[in-house]
Image 1 (tube, rainbow, N blue to C red):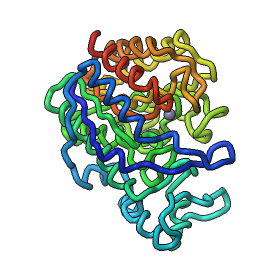
Image 2 (cartoon, rainbow, N blue to C red; image 1 turned 30 degrees about the vertical axis):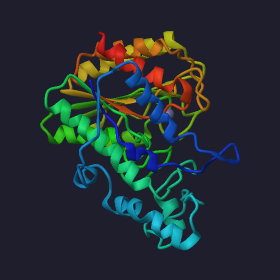
Image 3 (tube, rainbow, N blue to C red; image 1 turned 90 degrees about the horizontal axis):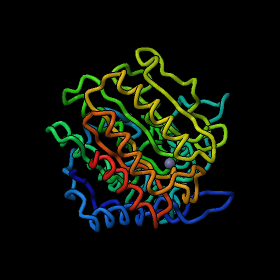
Length: 343
Ligand SMILES: [Zn+2]
């Protein structure tokens, strides 16, 4: 399996995020990608390549042009206004307020285009985010060229980013960008399977009215867990996409036995949709040792997860999402990939 990885991920290195009422060091940090890369090297897994630059066009197939311009320029505007410190939003729109006018103020636009205060924009955010999208797109190119699988070691992650919003450590939706690229490259139908602990609200929003793209997500129930306002079982898509969105929320404390049963439900739904290709949003924050999550998967369970995904029987692009137990993240992610390859 070819692995795409860009050193430019390091350019996204925020100082702090809002968590439990305090500004704390960012959980989403460069060490996450480093440990995955190091583990893959240590076990001699695949061949690691730098991604090819793909430019703005494939990003514009998924994201709003105004949003992309905002992301590209936000840091410069923030520094002019506030100086060299992480850009975090201050407030958001609520029902009864209006979004029809895009604020001129950078503070106003940070709130306009985001949904949380956990996702600092820094000097290197745009370059890091576009390098991650390039990894996903390069992986999609390999699938299109006939590879059975590829792994895009994306950082920052992407599944919380929507057409015109960022949050949850995500700026560009790498999985959705790859899925669209596969569609544009000739796949008639694509499926995205999201196994991150958190609901992939951005991917759902992007694919909501799409009948050619199935979104299936296993995640912690949003009545208890971030992102709270997305991920319920009754969210099934709309318009042409009605029925092409399957949310499988699970309670805190879910272990492999319960997870495996639900993953089987997801696999059957994907096979019934009969896509040409599968994109997996691979978060390993379902791990029992994760500092911000509450499922109980063990490291060896990730081998079984990889085997179960292989059992779906589709060309598969893995796209890295979350996972914050940094010491164990390399083993857990590598286990999914080796579990897939050995099946
Ligand atoms: Zn997550």
